Length: 254
Image (cartoon, rainbow, N blue to C red; front, side, top):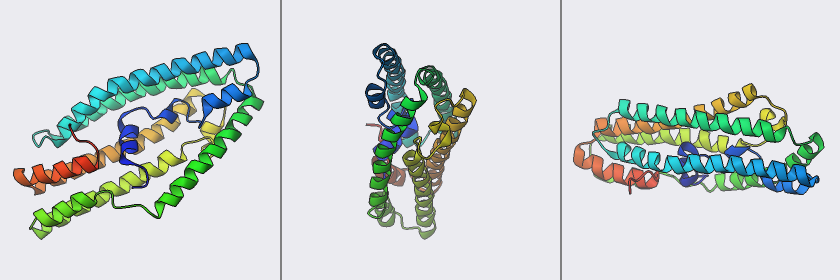
């Protein structure tokens, strides 16, 4: 897969590093281009505060992710239980994003337009290198679920059930690729809202809502594949297939 699944899982459940302000090397840019010492010190103190919010959010999410992992591979967990749990996670993320947006507004108001232009220019160079790296990897992408597909091919004799499971994995891969594209594109270079230093709260919430929608689609694809597996696999088959799948998707309950 183009972006490591570990990155995708982090983006799905945790707060990505860029999610603080969505600007590559933002803190480095502040240190380099804000020359007034007192204002720089004040801004960096507030950046540190935002990073603390980010750290606390991720700390809380560790236990949530463990709970999700156990629920996901437990055959007795219902789709309604998973969906309800995911809704709770999104509610928590909304609170986190709202706090981060408030801190972004506070910090960006103290950055001068000419300083912001220099910060974005530096950020653009880093973002373009990241995107170019992504494109190079695209042609070398491997089948992310190769082991799960091989397990299905070898262990499931019924052609219809086998086809249903493979199709479910292919649908999941499409959702993963869409989220990959989103992760790569999140920067001020390719998003006019992020490029606007003075973007208001309403616009920033609009951006995070679009981002959260891609998260929701992928999580629903995860649940859909699980439902397909549950409908087509006996318990012994479920244990074998889902064990392989959870390791490849890195949602093992270990």
